[in-house]
Image 1 (cartoon, rainbow, N blue to C red):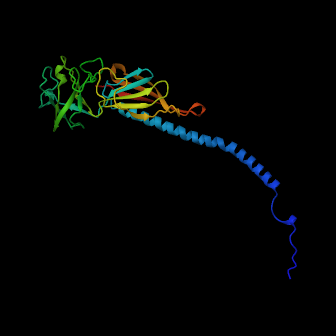
Image 2: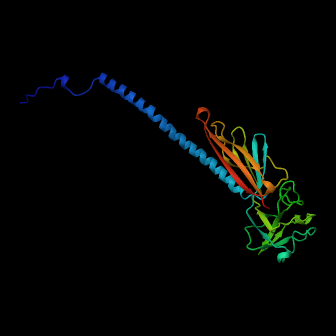
Image 3: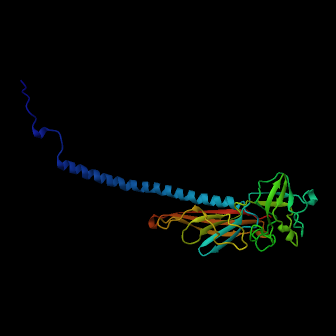
Length: 297
């Protein structure tokens, strides 16, 4: 026979409603205290991630500009600010080489001879640089205001300029579609027999960046050659830094250019400020690059 007595209610395990409420209150207080100490490191982490992303955006944009400017045709870089936008323009080259003239064994005549527009070919001295038909050859560029030694003359087939379109290439002989050099009353050959190649698919390049209110940083290319700097150029640009007024995303630039004494070595200074966010949540990163510009024609 089971003679065990039932356990009194007072001796059963458990907790009362008051005890549960006390535990909830204490847990809430502890959680609030932990949140106060954890919030700052968490916010700092997300801020550092956002700053890193902005820094990467600015760095990539400046590196792209630097890479292109270092390929600029000597004396072709020009800077203009219109309204709240600064435009950096230059003619971009893809290669260069040396041409032969009769004094060093040319077998194709002298395409730099004055008043001989029928001479449309020249020999390349040494290995042939990367070039193809419809690209352009430029000789001894001195830049705007120095006609005919100015590759910015209007049109692909210009007359009073130093830029000619390539019609064909056979071995080391380059044939031109036109010979503007024949119109130079005072021939302007390169002292070292140098020429630069301008790719037909790029031609002039412009980078545009706002100077006041934040906006996009854009790259314009393949819009042609113009004696007067286009601001902005025609065509659809590529975006380096996007802009969105609703989220406060965009960039501003401060640009200065010194062509250098005697036009030999210029210095392009760009300070790029990239912003993301509005009000107290705005994050800003500022990077500055100085780009050496080789202006030796």
